[in-house]
Amino acid sequence: MRVKSVLNASAPLLAAGGAYAIHRYWPDKIPLSASQTFPGLLGAVALVWLAYLAASWWSARLRQRAGEVAPLWAAALAGISLWQVVTGKMGLLPMPFFPGPDRVFSVFGVSSEVSMLAIGTLHSLRLLATGFICGSGAGFLLGVWIGWSKRANFWGMPVLKFFGPVPATAWIPLALVLFPTTFGASAFIIGLASLFPMIVLTSSGIAGVRHSHLEVARTLGADQWQLIRHVAIPSALPSIFVGLFMALSASFLTLIVAEMIGVKAGLGFYITWAQNFAEYYKVFAALLVMGVFFSGLMSALFAVRSRVLRWQQGVIKW
Amino acid sequence: MVDAAQQPPAVHAEQVRKVFPPAEGVIADSAAGTVALDGINLTVQPGEFVSLVGPSGCGKSTLLRIIAGLTDASAGRVSVNGVTVSGVDTNIGFVFQDPNLFPWLTVRQNVAFGPNMRGGRRNPHAGDVDDLIARVGLGAFADALPQHLSGGMAQRAALARALVNRPPVLLLDEPLGALDAFTRMAMQDELRNLTRRYNTTTLLVTHDIDEALYLSDRVIIFSPRPGRIQEEMVIGSGFTRARNAPGFVERRLRILETLHFAPTEADLPESVGNWKI
Image (cartoon, rainbow over all chains, first blue to last red; front, side, top):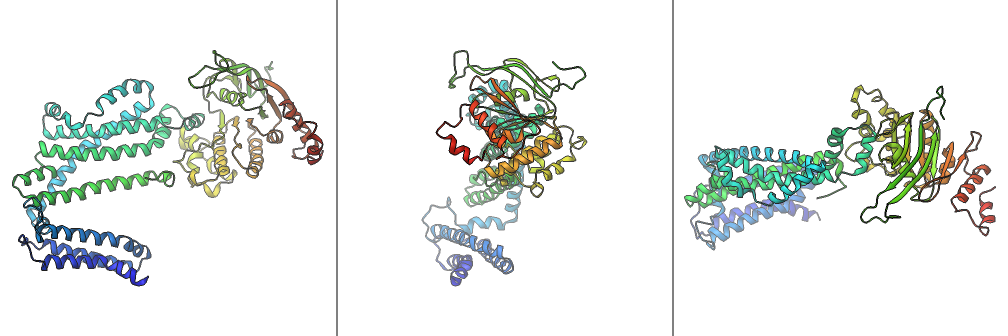
């Protein structure tokens, strides 16, 4: 038992060491990148893990958590190593489309590339935030209205059913005419992409409020606005959060399409730009940054959700 | 009717009739719909505790909802404290069979909901919230979420929430129906103490004849649908509210007889023996 847990805890170290050995000693089919970023990264991962283990000496909670994530860390390192074997070491995949990790991570060792990626991320974030906040905000308000008012539901629903399934990107030609700047047009398209899921899920949440909750609130003296604000919206929040998640992923998709087509900045633009020079290792590097960026935003939304919906924990799980 | 010098009755219903129109998927008695209530006349004096008993579907809950202004009567007139009911009014507290606590609010926030909707801190009853929570025995659970309460605790919180506005009239629609026998008996005592303390006029719909006899000044027995008032039983102040007292058992039998649920000849001797007449 004890031997097993020690082995488990040191698995990431072994994996990092193995990956380094493969990188350093396995003969290459395709010349290694001169950059030392990849071996440096392996060393850094090993050091971080050692620090984690050191910290868990004092905390039982950290120790348990370390035991849980150790196989995942080791697997990730093994995966990266396998990627290197398949590409650089054995040359099984065509170049330059599938560069090895040594080449991809070399991008993060060049300060001009790092600053381009960082600026691109900020551009993407600005565009995404503008579109997503406006779109989901408008979707929330319209959803509350359609969910609450029978008349708004009667007139609004057919419009929603007709235009809702049309992909937001189909509106690009129109958006380019309507807006003087590509930023405005792209923000509009991203807003449109988040609008539809937000309206649908907010309105269904509002319409699904328990009638008896509304009756109780009325007998306690709530007026129409208070019923919406203090009963309908709180009880629709679980559904509203599903809408936010769908709106966020729809706006990621639209963001990248917009940046690949018209916007001259951002991560999507960086990808097309690198592709034009056949620098596929930069494409992969940008994909990695995108993964961190998008999953970071998703995790942030998850964190907000579990804070706001604390009352729901144990009632519904997803 | 009512003397000018006298206080108006707390609740007054005159020839109330309720017909539910035929709806899709609902079995109606006739093409015109289902008559739930017919010719209901009821007067409840301030401070009185009145129970409505009767077979399921006899419209007693509908009558309660009409008095609360949650449902409109098809005909007739209802007034509360002399004012004709035309919609929901905070002079009337309502407790449903399901506690219906808002799951996103703690017990304290649930109880404070009424005062918060009506002026927040400036509401004269805002300070009563903690007092009422303590009075229904939930002091230690004021910050708990409804999902962590038992059925009886949730219903006590619902009662505190209805009472915090100090409504002169309290309507209870089978509030203890879903509770186990022991919790129910404990809550009956609490209910009586609270309504006495605040001198609240109370109308209770219940299926439990013992509960009605135990709590009420007057029991009103409904006929099966269409609901009409079949009999009124005044329980005097000298009445011994013990579930095994002779007067108690006798009245229970009379109510059962009225409802056609009285024990048959064959059952009687043994049952009466058990009831210690």
